[in-house]
Image 1 (cartoon, rainbow, N blue to C red):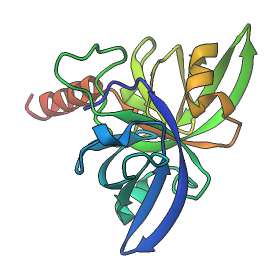
Image 2: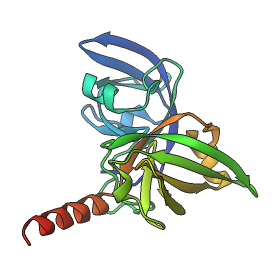
Image 3: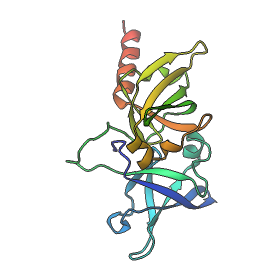
Length: 208
């Protein structure tokens, strides 16, 4: 489990396709504190550490990305040079600064607007119709692994939904979201509470 509070920006050093895709990520984390088999969220995707740098050298860790994960995440996420929002798994007793995040991407959305708002940025995102019921004003959403609050929601005639978020200067500087541009795909994870509430309503309707 994660909280959507990013603690490092990693950069993909190398990508090797061999059944699954082996990805090596450069990081400022102290890899001596990372166990083999540990979970690290990479731009919202929970992945397992299968290798890491030896003590004293530049920090890196390796993960295996399955074909299913590649298909369900934003195009370009797993290319050399790509920057990733990193978060290590939370421990019991950690401060829950964002919201409960599982590291399972529910869908891919598209940036449709980037507007300066004082020192902040307003980001408008187009969400697929399959995820539209799960997003509500002042609710939580995870964008490329970052826990954010939904400002406004506007349903479109084609069944999709546009929602907006606000990026304060701090969030822009400590995540990759400060570089978002119109047309860019992003990984979306809906609030786990919204997922279960929607399922409960579906089941209730069937049993009436």
